Length: 229
Image (tube, rainbow, N blue to C red; front, top):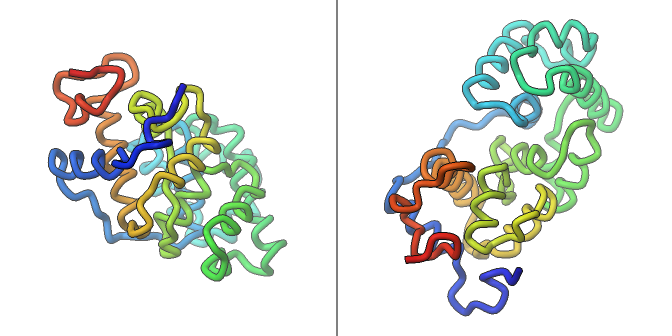
């Protein structure tokens, strides 16, 4: 498959962003968690519906007002709190492990040192943690108070990217992240990338769904090789 943007003098991603902004409106959120809290939130949210992971995150925070306590907890105790999320058994193991690894590497439970690294180095550092891949690492960097220029590529962005010719249809999170990042406009900052993620995710949840896409209602229909006009 040839990617749409490889030799295009009129890049597709800015047009996609403009169309989605016009249809869905601005999707900026000024609320940002500290990086460790965002790490916990993103690990819980992997392969889990937002409403479920939000509820579990709030309960986990209530049970562990200090994330240091969570890092010292047993997987069995963590599982009793996070059982509603998908892959709860694995996450109950990985969450305390990741927090302990941060302390072992930095001397305290903080990811503030990532502010001094460029995006790629920060991504590589986070990917070393148990249970953390490109999607979770980018969420920590972009959604948290670190406010770094990293696009969160989830299942919705992978699906839309494949259908629109931005990505190969079989791209995984790592490949999808790298390809999307190369197609971003240099002028787009961290807030622009956060908004782009939310716009594309909303389109994927409501119109360009996995099994029954509503192509006739899609603002990107004429840009999409799958639908066309």
